[in-house]
Image 1 (cartoon, helix red, strand yellow):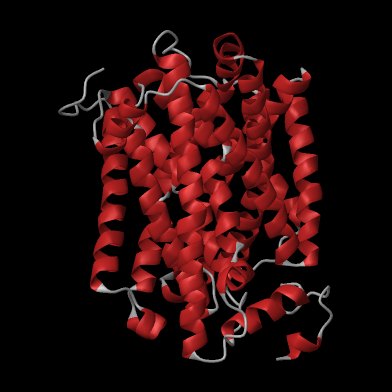
Image 2 (cartoon, rainbow, N blue to C red; image 1 turned 45 degrees about the vertical axis):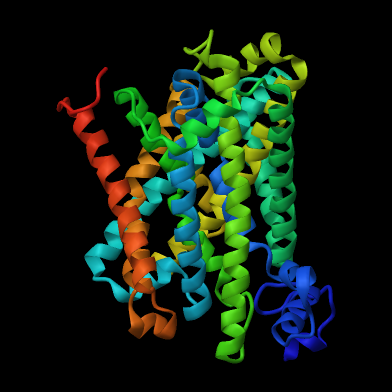
Length: 441
C-alpha cells in the first residue's frame, strides 16, 4: 500500500497519520495483534461518545436525580443500549459502503424526503450547539465569575482553535477528544468517591422502569435526546468511511469487529458517566433539595453539601464537556450539510449557522438550564429521522451485501425506533393538554 512508504508523521488520503495507517495495515495483515492492534482502530467511537456526555446530559441528569432520586436510572441504561446499537449500525454503514449516512440518504431517498431530513438535521444541529455552548459558558462563568455571554465567546474561540487540529488528520483530533473524555470520566469517578451513594436504590432504579408523573416523562424524553444524539448517528458513519482501507472481505470483517468492540467500550464509559451524574444528583439533592434543577444552583449547592472539591470537579468536567462536544458538533454539522446538499462550508460559516441561535437565546435572558433541557427534547423529537434512515439503509442487501442487518438486529433496531417514537408521541400529546393514562401532574 502507498501509505507504507510515507513518513509516519504525514497525513494519508484517508485522513490518518502515516503511523496510524501503518498500524492499521499491520493489524489487518495479522502482523500486529492484541491491544496494540485494537488501539490502531480506536478513535471514531471515542469521538462520537462525547455527544453522550455533553452539557445537555448534565441538565437532564441533574433534574432526574434531584427530582426523582434513583428512579430514572433505567432510562439512562435503556438509552445507552439503544445508542450502542445505532452507533454500531452507523459505523457499519461507513465501513461497508465507504459513504456516510447523509450521503447515502441523499442518494437513496426521494428528493422531498432528503430536504425534510436536512432541515430537521439542521434544527437538531442548532439545538446541539445551544446545549454545548451553554454548558461551556456556564462552567466558565461560574469558574471565573464572567457573564454568560463572555463565557460563550470564550467557548467559541477555544472550539475554533481546537478544530484547527483537524488539518493534521483524524488522529490529533481523536487524541484531543479522548483526553477530554478522560477528564470527564475521572471527574465523575471522584464524585462517586465523595458522594454518599445509596447503591441498593441505584441498582433498583437501573432495572425497574417507572415514570412517576408527567414531569418524569419530559425528563425521560430529554434523557433520550441527550443520550442518543442525532448528530452522533450521522457523524460515526463519516468517521469510519475510508478510515481503514480494506483489500478483501476478510479485512472488512476485522474492521467491523474492532469497530463493534470500540463502540461497546466507549459508550459503556459514556453510560457509566451518565449514571454517575444521576446518582450524584440523587445523593446530594433529592432528600433535601429536590427542587435543584439548574446547573448553577447545583454547583452552589454542592459546596456546602459535599465540599469545594466536589463543586470544583463538577465545573472542570462541565467545561471539558462543553468544549469537546462543541468541537464534535461542528464536525458533525459540516458532514451533514456536505452530505445532504453537496456544499463545502468553511468552518467559520458552519459555526455561525448553529452558534447564532445559542447567542440569541442567552441575549434574550432565557434561563440557561431550561434552555438546555428544551434543547434535549428538540433533539429527541428529531432523533427518529436518522434512526429510521439508518434502519432502512442497513437492512438492504443491495446496499450492504452480506453485512445487511440480520433478523435479530433488525428487530431490535425497529423496536428501539418505535420506543423513541412512542415517547415522543406521548410528550407531544401532553404538551397539547391531552390526558395521558398512568401519568399525573
